[in-house]
Structure formats: C-alpha cells, structure tokens
Length: 443
Image (cartoon, rainbow, N blue to C red):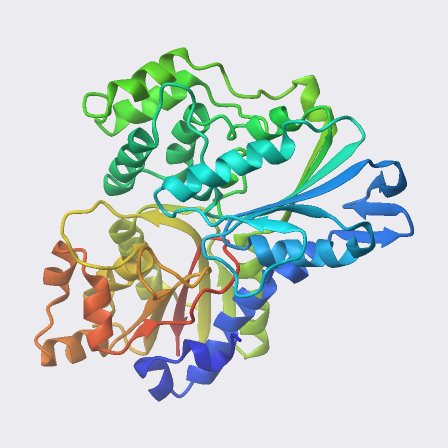
C-alpha cells in the first residue's frame, strides 16, 4: 500500500519539511488511483448503465465484454466487473504483469513493455478474437491506460514483430517523443489508430481512458485503439526522416507505411457508436498535489503539464526558474509532462532520474532548494525507481563518495549515482500511470 513513508529517501528523511513534502507527492498519486478514477464516471440504475452521462440499456444487450489494456488494466476493470457481476461479464485483461489473483470470467494475457514481444502479439490475437464477431446489440467496454501500445500488438501483414521491436528500440534510443512513436505504431498495427473499434463494429464501444500522454490526445494514448487518428502515413514517414531512421529501418517498415490502408479518421460514421472518456490525467495529479501543497502552507504554482524535450534541457530550464523565483518561501512549483533521453552510454536509469541528475550541479549553489522527479507509475524506464531527490547538498555528498555527476550523465547512469546516495524514490508499481511530475521546493 502506498503511504507517505514510501517516498522517504535519505534527503527527505533528514529534511525538516520532509514529511510535508511526502504528503504532497502521495496526494498526486492518490488522485489518479485507477479504481477511484473509473468510479467517478459511471453509475448503474437498475438495467441502465450511465457512463459520463450517456445511457446504455443493459437488458437490451446480448453480450457485455470488458477489455482492460495497460498498466492499470486490472485496477480499472475491477469496479465495472463488480457493478455488472449479476450479468456475468467476461473479457480480456492485458497488463504488464500477471496479477496475483485471477478475475472470474476473464482471460489474462500480459504483454511486453516498453518494447513489444511475443506475449504482446498473443495479446493482440486474443483481443481480435474477443471483438471480431460482435453485433449491434453487444457492448464492449474498454479500460485503457499507459503502456497499452507495447502490451498489445497486431502487426499488419508484411510487418513482423522483429521489425516493430527494432523500430521501437531505435525510436526510444534517439529520444523520439511518445506521440511520434505512437504515430508510427498506429500505421503499422491493425488494432491501433481506431483499429479495435473498427473490428468491433457494429457493437457499441465505450473506452474509459487513464491518460499518460501530454495534453491527452485520444489517438496517442495506447496508440488510440478506439479513437480516430488525424495523422497520416506521410506523417509517420516524416518521423523517420526527422530522426534519420529512414535509411536504417527494415524495408518491411517502409513498405508497410507506404502501402497499408489508412487508419480510422475523424468524421467516420463508425465513430458514432464509440464513446471515449478521459477519467484521469497528469493535470489532475498535479492539481491534487497543488491543493495538498497549499494546505501544508506552501506558496504554490503550477508550471503546466506539457513539459517535453530532452530531460537535460528541461532540467536546465526548471533549475533556472527555481534559481530566479522571487515568491515568498516556502514555495512549491509543480510541472508535468514527459521528457525524453537520447542514449549515449550503457548505464541504468530513466528520464526522471536523468533530469534529476542534470540538476545536481545547478542546485549546488541554491540555498534551501529541493527538486524531485516522479514517474507516476512508480517505474522510471527499465528500473525499480520512480525518480530521485536533489538538494543543495547532493553535489557535495556525491563528490565525497567520488561521484562526479557529469561522468554518470555521459553514461546515462543516474540510477547508480542516486543509489549510492540513497536518494532514489522507490514506491513500487503504483497501479496508475499519468506521465511524470517534477516538484521544485524552496524553504
């Protein structure tokens, strides 16, 4: 269970305001707890299910199927499975890890993440089997959260899993944004870019979506399996050009992008039978943290939820803001978004840890300041840390241990640096995922 103690690191354990800071961090995660987020948007009155104000008459439905996709799939599905228990709903869950306890009536097929694997393809095949013979009297309810793009994969004819794995790895390594990566995924996968909704037609489709994408574009969250896609194959090819990958990706990728049918587009009549609802987002988490911050007596300011770009560049910009803020103290600045990392070395870490490491020397000459990075899913990149804590003493403590931040940055090895200092935030998998948060404190 996530508590304020889950956030304590060396620095926060020894800071006079450490407990207040951990309460602010915990408030952000609790606000986007998947079960609570889903419950806010539906209710049942007899045979009528109301989802965000839209009515579905359960006694007129032949079949009711649930499809949970993403890191929060189980937690998001449980409330609806309980509400509809008398109707014996069945379905499919596609999580990152198999849950400890099975859910009656549901097939569970974990997929691979952040790069799709054979299990992802198996999950895609099962999703297709679940929806391909639905009729107009059936209801498909999808519970979608972050990670879904990799966890479920159904490569288009002519494109292999190996092709997609190679492409995904190359895009992640070169620092491509998640929306750019998903533009390619939508045009190479038959379930993405509205593909799932197309296969389920003429059934009614409802998707309750926990957003892990900056500004919540429906087509980008899990690559939009039930959403229309405004991008084109030309846009996908432009991403390859931007990162110099057109000459290095497999020929099957290029052929697929040039010849595959276009994705589902806005205005298609099929969309009339689909309801997409955002139930949680980075903004909600940031606002809840801000509310807690104010209650703790901090002057509080939201810096926006669209921070993107290279983690080191964002770190410099936030450090500059922190250095030049003239507000009263104590203060708390909250920023949200999703940065990227261009891999140059072979170390361990994720974008949140790298952003924190890039701030170590910047904060060394700032009195009574603190910077904290937090991946809301509890897992930053391929590590068991959610982020890290930096204050004015971090550089000094590191140098005393023989650690030079630049050396670790060059090797993309922020995890090792903060592990030695015991300043990694390790809250474990949170069960939710709404991108990343950065907190800047002054005391």
